[in-house]
Every structure is written in C-alpha cells, then in structure tokens.
Image (cartoon, rainbow, N blue to C red):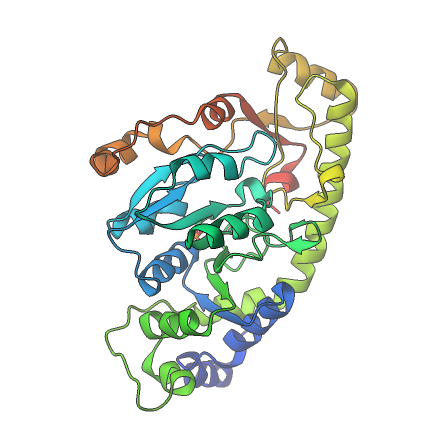
Length: 349
Ligand SMILES: *Cc1c(COP(=O)(O)O)cnc(C)c1O
C-alpha cells in the first residue's frame, strides 16, 4: 500500500517531471539510444503535441489507410489533410514507392505506423523524408521492443510515440512517451504540454507558458511503468518466440502467405500475430489443421479497419480529402488478414 508521505513527495515532484517521470524517460532514452524522451498522457496526445510543435496545422501529410484511427485522430483534428499511400503486403507498413507517387509540393510530413508491432522500414522512410524535406513521424504505439535490422522500430523518425495502454508492451493504465533527437522539437513539446515548473527547469527561468495544455503523464502510471518496464520487455521476448513458433508451423503448412520476418531481420513485437490465407483455403479448414497440431486458440478479425471505409472518418473528414482513395494492397489486407490468438497471452500480454 502507498503511504501518505510518499504521496506528498510525489506531489512535490510531479509537476517538475523529475522523480519517477524522469526515471521512465531515462529508461526510454536508453532503450532507443535517443537524446530526448518526454512522457505524456497517452500516445494520442503525444501525436497531437508533435503536430503542434512541428507547425502541422492545416497541412498535408502522407500516411497509411491501414491503421487504428488514433494514429491520425489528432492530426485530423488540427485540420491536416491526409493523403493515403499504399502498404507493403508483408509488413503492412507504408510502401516507399507508393509514398513517392502521392507526395505533392504541399506535403509536409510522413506519418508512419508499426502496425501490429511490425517495424516499418525506418531506414528507407528516413531517406525518403530527407530527400523531400518532410518531417517523418512514427506511431510506434504497438512496437516497443520490436527491431528491424537490429534497430529499434521507427528509430530514425524525427519523433516517435509509444503507448502504455492496454495490450501494449508496457502497461501502465494509460500513458505514453515521445522520443526525438531534435533539441528544438523537445523544447517546444515541453512548452506546449508541460507545467511551468518543468518549463523553468528545462527551458530556463525566463520562459513560462501557463497556456500549455496539460499533457503530463499520471504520476502513478510512471510508477507502474518503471516497476514493470524491464520485466515487460523480457516477457515480450517469450511472446516473440511463441509467435515465431506459430509462424514456423504456418509456413510449413503452406495454407497462408509465407511470413518471412526472420530472413529480413525483422523481429516484431507481435501486438497481434496476423496472416493472410492463400486463395482457396477456408479459415475453418486452417483452424482444424492447426488444432490437429496442438494449437489451442482462435482465429479472429484484426482490430483494424480501413480508414477511408469507416463511416465516421468519411462523415468528418472526407471533404478534406481531394484524393480518389485507391490503395489496393491495404484494401486487400483489410479484408483478408486474420489474427492468430494461440492463447490469451497472445492478445493481452
Ligand atoms: C494504442 C494505439 C494508439 C493510441 O494510444 P493511446 O496511448 O491509447 O493514446 C495509437 N496508435 C496505435 C497504432 C495504437 O495501437
């Protein structure tokens, strides 16, 4: 149980971003090898703060239509115009070729996602963004603990966001964090989201913005995330091994499209383990065969719907989109992907 003395000391340090908050930020900086980490209320708020700090309001950005709506929610709210580019069939992340085809002179940013915890090609996306002078922002809410080519997922983004809500690698009730190597971006994020006490500490006594929106992480969430951070990453490794075993079985059965993460140096966090059936196979047939190999669990629809097919997106934002929506791969995947939950742990770590 928490003692009242502890609560008093938390109150004293909470607004300043020191104590548990600083400890969590330091774990994140160390994990990613990045210079700045800022804990925030949740990942959605983190993405919102990044857009504000980068001046992304009423601007055009390129993103994927195959993600959870929270990826785009805050950017849409700020009046930004999404342009959807198609995805890669194996990693479900933005295809650089497709992005190239839709970039216009007005495009200001690239918003990538590590969907289901599969790391996008951060090296290629970085190169592309630099070539066109775009901000590269990554929604890494599902990919903490995932690597590609030995690099943490989305490492080369100008800013990436992680989440500590239900089902994510580290669970703290609610919470999130932004990581970046840009000092000026970090300072603006502090300015927009943190209490003047933290602003004084980090920006200097002469700077003070009472008009910041409260984006602070809950102090108890920071305590929880700190207490479970290392163990959560260790548990993730077990989960990853289990998923790779299921993948081996699937590949050996040959009823689903081959999953070739291992040869590509991709180690997803497997927020979900997903696959697509080959043409003629029925899902019920696959389930029976899996069960005959000792698989106990279920095959389910993924918790992702194509953004531009959602009535709530169309009702609110279709008028913003000048684009004829056409992402055949994303459309195909949104219909044909399924999730493999071999036991409860696969879905709720
Ligand atoms: C969970 C999640 C978010 C939102 O995270 P919150 O911390 O709940 O705001 C955003 N994008 C993706 C891909 C997510 O999975």
